[in-house]
Length: 505
Image (tube, rainbow, N blue to C red; front, top):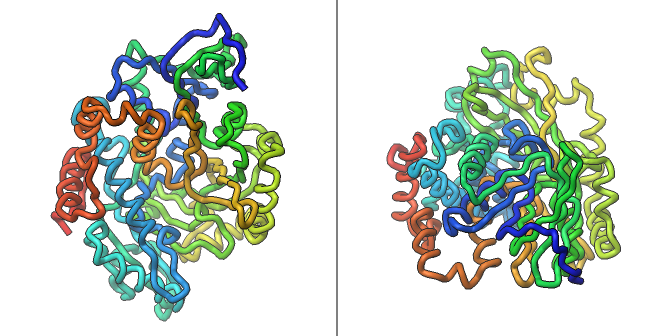
């Protein structure tokens, strides 16, 4: 229900809640498409990109479905479904197009600070997994989005690809891997900071750090009134906006519930925390150069797919293994233990209970993960690095994710492992819920959000011309057009200083 408008409310066109990659992307798009629009950004922490967008809090994979096996499920007949992989790979190319535009136009400096070429690999062991990976490769190699992918079961070839993984391994073990050189490592924290640095220099954009949104209410005139507390001075103020985007990561659900919109009813959240083992031995780090993804354990969430990752963070090469999943009632790494209970409302109790009953194996898996000892974590690492020594690795706390629970007529409620955009019928408020592959596909998600929330404006010639300048493939399908894919990839790779283009494979 709309309330009476507060006379003291300051007015802006757009409010962005949360200073992560999603708000940074949306804010930059809006500023490029509508340079005169006034934007105010509120972040409860005293720095940007400190939650899920921080480099240590996500895999930085540049999720493009080149190596993530959970994006290519096996059907009951044994065939492999690559439709989701195609969709994600195309979306990542669109992200690279936009990032290339930012670099080419001076909005972001030095692309190597946020994106680098790192081969993407899938690695499996055991007869059934090898059979699956072979079928996956045979299905994917014929699509131009995955051109250049190689497959091997040969231990000698594997020793060339991943010497660290092959050291000390049983020569009779049945192994298989795919490798593709156009993969990337993305520092979303560095990218987010660059975008906000650019935005904050604009006279019509205000970035408010250490500002916590306490309430979101609809005014009688249809605008949204956002009550914000300055955590430094403890003072509150109210800001009125035509459009509000909630991009607060795990905190989005609680804020969306405050809005009271009908479209938000029935949504719940299931928090999953994570940890990494971080290598501290430079000699070990130097032996590995790839992002290697395996298969998730039965009952585990997709975000817990084991992977051995080469990372480049702040110019320094790192090596991570994990993530080890855990459970916390917090919705943010810097959140409250009361986040989960506070999110439970009358309208989402049934979906949450139903999803919980349907995901008992997941609950058991998380309990076992929480109970793991250092020796247990080392044993999991040794499946990928047989020669691993405990003294070469230390535990690093990763980010907090909130998986989406939504209403389902058949089951009452289902647990979703992707991302979900929830918006009001009139498009005046929207929120992004969920996790992977969100950051990597942020540009596509935000372009779709703008079309949904501003349908008339998104049809204007001025809007379409500018969007095509930023995204040269806009209106065409990279997934359906091989020549377009090649042109777009080569252009993006040249501007972003990436290696392993289609031209070189």
